Length: 61
Image (cartoon, rainbow, N blue to C red):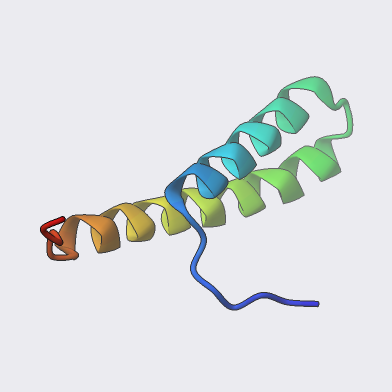
C-alpha cells in the first residue's frame, strides 16, 4: 500500500543512509548503479523537504 503523506526529514535521511550503506557494501555493479539512482532521487526529495520546511511559517505555541 502506498502512503502519499509527505515524509518527515528524518525518514528521508534514514533512507539515504540505508542506501549509502548498501551501495558501499554490495559488490554487484548493476545493483550499485540502480541504488545510486534511487539515492539521487532521495537526495533530491531531501532537498525539497528541507526547502518546504524552511518556507513553512512558524506557529507560535
